[in-house]
Length: 418
Image: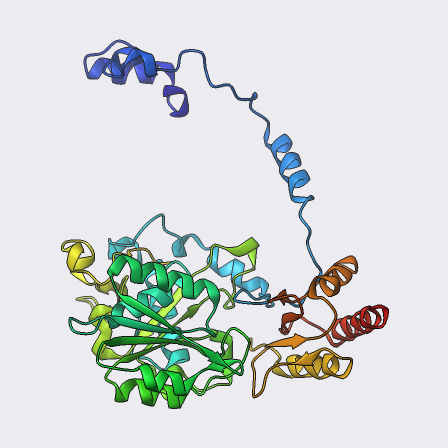
């Protein structure tokens, strides 16, 4: 173990002597002999920095990197300005752990404060936390916030992201909450079913808007029904969509959650991402994680501090609604509409019945895997296959008109050959 510590042999001997020992073996005398490693680890010899770099580059070269992507389903490729990496690389914005000591953590505290302010502006909510692990955990934490002594049931839309549904199901199991899935109808949440099943036992309803298929939900009607039954509405949103859609608060949501990946994070093979959460003031003390606030010191200078966190998350954990402690350019809507129209014209019928946001579903007689394999041969990652004949497509500002025309041309050839 001593070899992993950057001290000289002489320095180690001096430290051992200070505690009355003469060797490293004396230091680990309490460890049973049979579990000590005497022969060294059976691993290859170490490599130089250059050799490691070459090996890593060779491994990375085995990855299939698509220059053209038409897939979303919860993780989206957007243009990230170079300035983003430059800013987040500043050492005063980086910390190894929670910024408990405000006097030495002003940079990271200010960045969290600005982030929270931005999320509140986007969602229309009163307060935001410093983020949770990802969008799915944010959805589950939002439902957990709704739980009350006499209300112990959650309803989740079948049109929500599948992994958000899975996370909510896991949380409900751990919290002993009852869970029911609201069926979808014509690509959106079945409002009639929801109204029939809202009763005094329902604590919260989870709705995603735009939903998994890119469709816009009847969010205001759903919010009204939920509140009339005395329950709370948790709305999952794509933050980019909030540039043109109403805020969750305007739709009537009590809690807004979502995946923050579109806000400057690359796809990165699925993570790490961050989940954002915001809520109305009346639910502030149920919000998991930490809240950073702005204040002034005794000299009148602006300062930032950790303002609020539910004490139960640390002290009375069995009473806590959450034990989570970590914090973690508009897309071209016209592009999605253009591609959907072109695909529909060649036999890939668009299933979306109403307005949709940058994702849509097509159905055709051509098997989905046949379509996607042909696109892959042209270095294009197509949409996500939902079943044998349905594909969920996605367009962002990264997709050019030329790329869309190329997809349409290829699919036209595939259909003609089938």
